[in-house]
Image 1 (tube, rainbow, N blue to C red):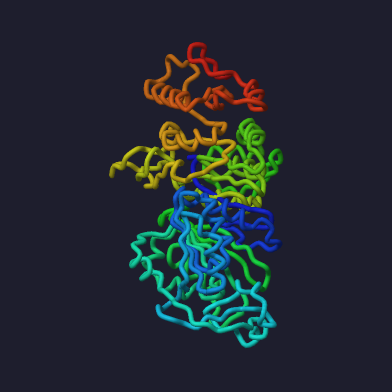
Image 2: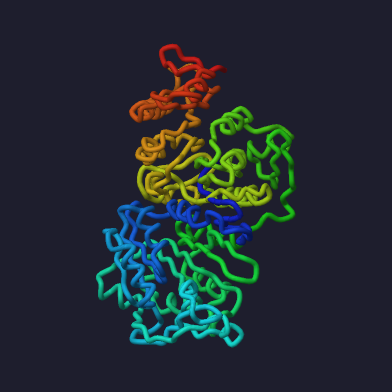
Length: 510
């Protein structure tokens, strides 16, 4: 069974971790803010509600409003001087609302320690101001006036302002992030993503330490996606609700199983890829154990079609044979989404990506379909609907369109006769990016005498492709490649390598 979900993302010196990957990266902050916005866009709707605590002078606030033009951006800034600048910069931006408030664990007024640097006279250091008192060792560096500011508890404030959910929360509170989060459990339930400034040094009294923050968010159902930081100082972390990647059953499986001594490491020299394989009677694993390349022709096509800096999709990833190829070609500026709902294969997929140092992949242990539902996943295929007599695992499905992915250069789809449902749920995504689609679809070499069910599925898949504005070409056997009808340039030349599918003159190249 070859299937569905993974994502890891790496930019410059940033490492993204969706599951069992390294969770830090050190180096320059070059372009980090823009790369962070690109990463967050994978997990947010087109019209997110964004809450920012610590708006400062508004540069980040404005970047959110520009990235998500249909968003509602709510920004808090308690420092009167910073708030004045924030107000002047954002007054003509209609989707930004600003409040001269501090988020805190309790409402009412509280002392706010404005930072004006070592000499206490430079407003350029105001970004380091906080509700927390500077630690004894840092008082000399955090000099400045102490003022009273109005505070609000986020749960109460959202209730009073009729805000029923927040999609993305960005906290830059100079150490009080955990206090704010703990005081607002209701709001936290409906948050998709959280970006937080992190600390590994007690700059202020009661500064939130990163490990404590991470443990708390994980207990609330979040999963660390990426953490960039300067060794021994501070950084930025992004957490995403774990349910985006996998369900409880898959998480339980990962918690109780591992790649152990039953697995042996193999090296495939053509694509230079390592695999840890067990004794499972799996056709793909058998081929790899024998030292052969699995679907080498498909691998080469994907290598040629995955554009550097783009997004590639591996729908039905299995253990990651093609995921690794696309990951390397997409590069540090690109990303791969790999979908694999089979729990064991998902674990092995994560391992393959880990040992091959693929750090630009997002893994999701769910199946793609035409609408969200629960289906049965057995050793052969996905079965629509749920019946107690069916054997197999229950898996959650989502639509590709629900993910709001853009800039897709290529989609590889191997979903064991489930292509039609995946494509139906991907219409908007396909029409928006117009990627090349490499896919498998079962049919006999004798088209007219193929079984009625097989022929009916084949016909509806090809018809759906055509309705999306695609032409289908034959790679070999049951492997096909679809190009947009209006493709030009290098892709127009590339498709000449293949023979166009013609059911009236059926030739699968076999």
